[in-house]
Every structure is written in C-alpha cells, then in structure tokens.
Image 1 (cartoon, one colour):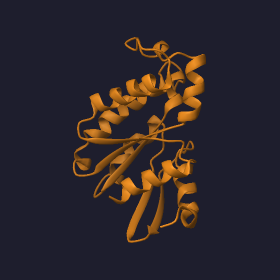
Image 2 (cartoon, helix red, strand yellow):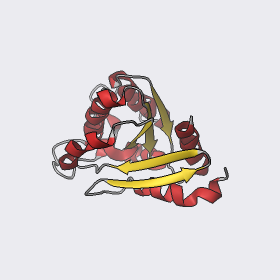
Image 3 (tube, helix red, strand yellow):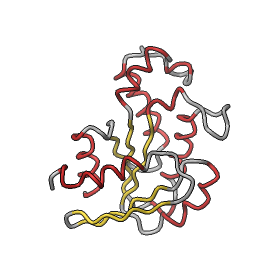
Image 4 (tube, helix red, strand yellow):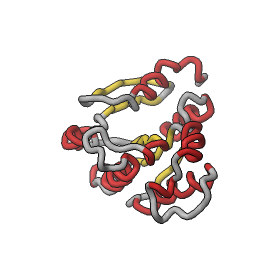
Length: 176
C-alpha cells in the first residue's frame, strides 16, 4: 500500500485528535483490513459511553500529545493533562474488554515537545524527573511512566503523524 493512496485515512486519523463532543465512527477498508476508528471524545463527561466501543476490538490506539505535560484540562484547570492521560491510560490498559486487544501508545507532537522543554521544564510537572531537559531523556521518562502503569504489554510510537514514516509505522502496527 502506498501512503499517498490513503491520505484520506490519515487525515481522518489525525482529525481524531481534535476536540470532539460525541462518539464518532469512521470506517475504512484498506488492503485486506477493516478499520473502525472511534473517536470517543477526550473530555471527562464522555468517558462513560466508551465501554460500548470496547467490545471485540483487536487494537487500541491511545494518543497522547507530548506537550500536555505543560497544559491543564479544559474542564479543570487544576489538573495537568499529562497526569490525566496517565490515569486514563492505566484504566484503558486494565479494561476487561481490552485484554486481547493490542495497545499502541502514540506519542505525538514530538517536534513541539522538544521546543517546549527549553521553555517549560518537565520537572515542573513531575517532581521525580531529575534528568536534563534534553528531549531524549524527557521522552524516555514519559515513556517509562506509561510503561510502569500499563497492565499489559504496550507498543510505543513517537511521531508527529504528519510525518510520513511515523504514520506508516502506526499503520503497520495496526495491521499486525
């Protein structure tokens, strides 16, 4: 499959990261695979309805914007987005409906993350972060945070998703 032939798929995949207010299903047939991409809404008030999406899934893509460590929730400006993502990820990884599903953590906005580290140190969010604000150290720290709370094996991909190679890597992982 050529990436250019499936640009609409990637546009839809990228659009799933926009703020949404309801569950949205995008169906895609690609090669010999069928994908149902559920956007379950990122806000807390929509989470109760997620369980209906979790039955019979083969793969879950869990997107986390790396710059969330320097942001707060829309609903509660006292709660850090990255900490909320960690809590939610732990819940998703332990969900009984997902025990047989592959879990892929997609860390996005790596390019902006690198720039943000020089302005807003990771240690402002995580007291236990004592390394330098060099991007690889900070990225490893965040990856380790997610690995340590996962209740199952996970695959981690770091990308901007607008990057062709990153998008292809996510697609290949979904197919397998």
